[in-house]
Structures are given as structure tokens and as C-alpha cells.
Length: 88
Image (cartoon, rainbow, N blue to C red; front, side, top):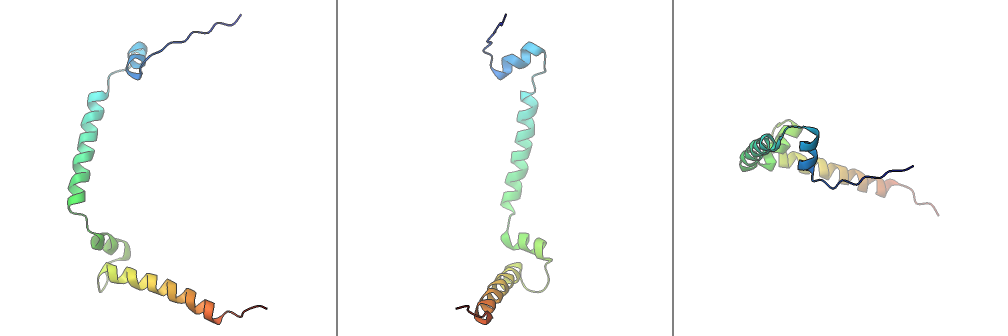
């Protein structure tokens, strides 16, 4: 014998049915804090500061260092293309 029971509940009703606490106010407060911190960080964000933290902030700006790295990668690739023998 097979018995099938379909219960149509919302997530809130399911939590109440099994006796779980309502954590929605706690979740909203936590998300409000996260949003507040993200917005505060977004106001002080700078690409140069981020790149300085990644590349160590030596002499010159981080953008200059990043440009030099990218330029070096592309120049190595073009140098290999020029020196590689062409097969016939």
C-alpha cells in the first residue's frame, strides 16, 4: 500500500510547523550591517590602493607597476613569436 501526502507550505509556515525560531529580524539586522559596511568601503575604494596592496606599493604607482607587468607579458609573447622557427 502506498500513501502520498502533499502539504503545501511556505518556508515560514514549515519553520513554524517544526518549531524553529523566527530568525528573520536577526537576518535583516545582519544584512543591514553588511550593507552599511559595503557602502562605507565603496566610498573609499580606489583602484590604485587595491593594486598597491596586491603589488607591494614600491616606487611608482600600482597602475604603473601593473602596466609594466602586462607590457612584459605581451613583449615576451611577441619575442617568442619572432624567434620561433616556422615549419614548412
